[in-house]
Image (cartoon, rainbow, N blue to C red; front, side, top):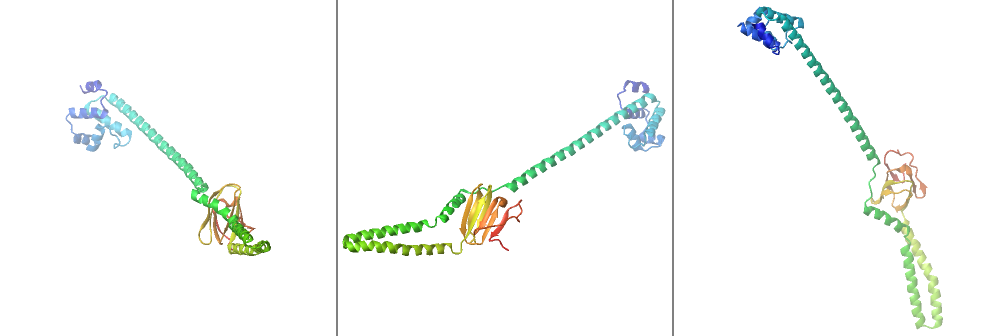
Length: 295
C-alpha cells in the first residue's frame, strides 16, 4: 500500500516520503533515531532533505536503505530519486558558484574602470591647474596701459610749461613795444629771448634729476604669452596680468622689486640696462625673485 502511494506521487520530496512512511507506522523521531543509531536532529535533517550533517554520500544512502527496510519502501525508486535530487542540488550549487564568480569578476572590472577614470580626471585637473593663468581685470589692464606712456613722456608737461612761458614773455614784449620807444622795444625781445633758455633749461634739468633720483628701470620683452606681477619697494603693485607675445613692458620705480613670472623662460628681463640671468629657475613652476637679484 505504501509503495503504491509513493509511486502515485513521484514529485514528492524524498525526505517527505520518508517522514510520511514513519508517521504511517506510528514511529516517533526518537524511536527512529534509536533504531538507526542516529540523533533526533539527524533524523529530522534526513526527512528535510538536508544531508550536510550526515557525512559522506555513502552514509546517507545507507540511512535511506534503512528507512526502506524498516517500512518496506521501494528502495530502487527512492535511491533513483535521491540521485536525481543530488544532481539537481549540484547543478544549483555550480550555477550559484558561477554566478558568484561572474559577479565578483564584474565588480573587479568595474572598480578597475573607475580607477582608470579617476586617474584620467585627476591628471587632466592637474595639467589644467599647472597651466592656468589668471586673467587681468579691466582696471588693472587700464592701469598698466596708462602707466607706461606717462613714464616715457615725463617731459611733456615741462615743454608745455616752457611754451606757455615763452608766449607770456612775447605778450609782455608786445605790450612794451606799444608804450616805449622803438629802441627800447628792439632791445627787450633780444634780452628776454636770450635769457629765457638759460633760466628754463636748468629748471628742466633739475626736475629730471629729482624725478630720476633713486629710480630703477625694468624692461621685459615677452616672446610668448606670459603672466607677470611686480611690486616696488613701497609694496605697490606696478604691473599685473597676462602680457601678449611681442609686448615690451618698461617700468620705472623704486628698487628692490618683487617679481613673479608665469613662464620666465620666454621673457627677456633687463634691469638698469643689464640682462638678468634666469636660467637657474625651474621651468615647471612660477619664478619668484627680486630685482636686483640677491647674491
